[in-house]
Image (tube, rainbow, N blue to C red; front, side):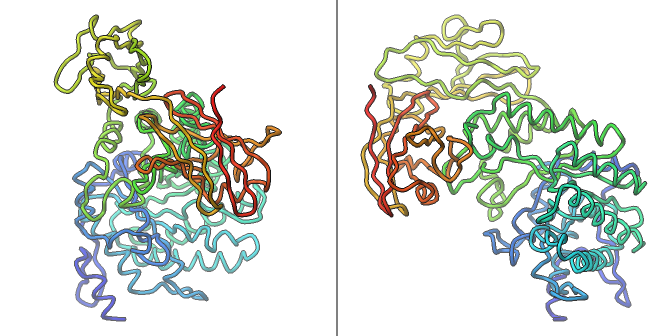
Amino acid sequence: MALLVILGLSGSTALAAPGGTPQRAASAVKVPARAMDAVAAMQPSWNLGNTLDAIPDETSWGNPKVTRELFKTMRAEGFRSVRIPVTWTDHHSATAPYTIDAAFMSRVKQLVDWALAEDLYVVLNIHHDSWQWISKMPTDHDAVLARYNSLWTQIAERFRDAPRALLFESVNEPQFADATDAQKTKLLNELNVSFHKIVRSSGGGNANRLLVLPTVYCTPDQNLMDDLSATIRKLNDRNLVATVHYYSWYPFSVNIAGGTHYDDAAQNDLDDAFARMRDTFVAQGIPVYLGEYGLLGYPDHNHPSRVERGEALKYYEHLGYAARLAGVTTALWDPGTWAYLNRETRKWTDPALFAWIKSSWTTRSGTASFDKVFLEKKEPITAKGVTLNLNGTKFRGLWHGETKLVGGRDYTLFDKTRLVLTAGALTRLTGDREYGVNATLQARFSRGLPWQIEVVTYDGPVLSNATGKTDAFTIPTQYRGDVLATMEARYGDGSNAGQTDWTPYQEFNMAFSPDYPKGTIILTPEFLKGLRDGEQVTLTFHFYSGAKLMYHVKKSGDSVTGTAVKES
């Protein structure tokens, strides 16, 4: 064990003085005295997700072991703070006194020290323990509280002399099973107050360390934020920070219930959430650290994209602006290699996506009603347009590569926002009109990033009859340049079909999924097994061109038949 501890500390910036007294980790960060200023200095922030919080070990969820170079990369990419989620469940004794494994604690400290040494603020927490055992607090109150207190006592002691650039977060997304709302509020208040007492009483740098307190589930609902605000007021401590998470309007975030566009409902949800953060906390002198944000189903480079790219970019652009307006520091949730940053190469998997996120930290960018213009191949080409969302910018022109298109000949701008491409320009851009993207244009604005508009040639998709089993069923599909948006499922009596019975519009990649290279639409086993036996279900596939196709499926035991519905 001693050897493991030594190896765990290898390369750490923490040093041991003669006699074994731990010294502070190196950090050149000058932390402002005021909590509001300190949290503002942490913007922007990034999550080392699915790593020390992975179950049971650091590499269990597909990410490589962290090196100091990773933190150096994040600092170079413009981040000023990192959140290091930690799940402690499998790394401490299961019974009192709940002693944390020395090697694991040393590994946690090593990562914290590396990040501090790269002049990053660090947020350290108790993470998935929230649903693994803290959630049992309503029925096992004393044992859960004792375990929680023991963990924070040990963590506070180990990091007692760390720089103030290290913050502690009491618990991630706290939840309590089989409890009323009032009970949840009371239990979370108890955890937060106990956490505060333990850390403050441990002395050293913990006497004025910034402490981050969450709402129930880290949800930004008004009543939950009011409850947290009451806790913070009672603690009467100027070094407290409120935290919530935001993953957008749920139907849009996962593409369910028809949430195929970043529409008014999604935009209003974001605006309202940040206004609540501002009014409840920031305006009252309490800083807000948005500990996680993103989209629940995007990006995922291992599966078809359930959120349309341009619609996702509009969300990230809007969120950056709303956060700046509200004075909220934002921490991007990054689960690792399959999403934003490839941890192996330390390169962004989608650099253009990250460019939009980064731009949103400082400025607005213009967007448009959509990022594609669809031209049906079987029809003559006519003028097509999009509506520009200027977002406070001015339209500067339209480019195809390095060539600037000519206003009045190639396009017309009506009322400063309606951009219409002429039939002549579209004819030139589409060339031989092969299915798919024929040209990509850039609408450029007075500031921010250009908005890409793809000119797409398509014909209506074609579905074919099929047979299969509930564990493997696909619909032969000729996409012909089109892109699948969503699937609607209903029984003959009009009721909703599938495992999501509260809406006819099923969840992308969970009930259905396009396979463009193989020319199919996959109906998942979960969706098919959720259908009533022997009853015909009418599926309506919606495509981003506006095309809609109907298809019948019927399950009989473990067999499934599919029939294409001819257009009338």
